[in-house]
Image 1 (tube, rainbow, N blue to C red):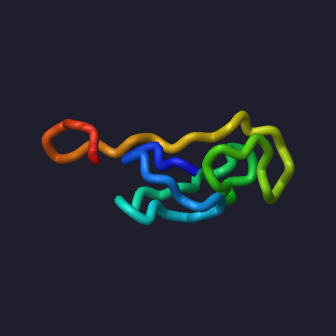
Image 2: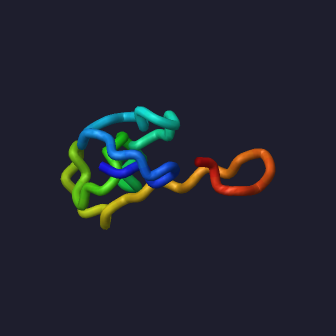
Length: 66
C-alpha cells in the first residue's frame, strides 16, 4: 500500500505509514469501523464503500507534507 501522503510503500494492512506516520485507515460510512485504505467493501459490515482513500496532510505552511 502506497502512502497517499508521502508515497512510501507500506505492507497491506498497515495502520500507519512507516515513513511519515500518516493514518492508513478510514471509517466505513455505514458502520463507522476503521478499514485499511483501498478496500472496496467494509471488512466489518460488508457494505460496498468504493475504494476509500485517505486525505493528504497539509504542513503548517500550506504545502503538501513529504
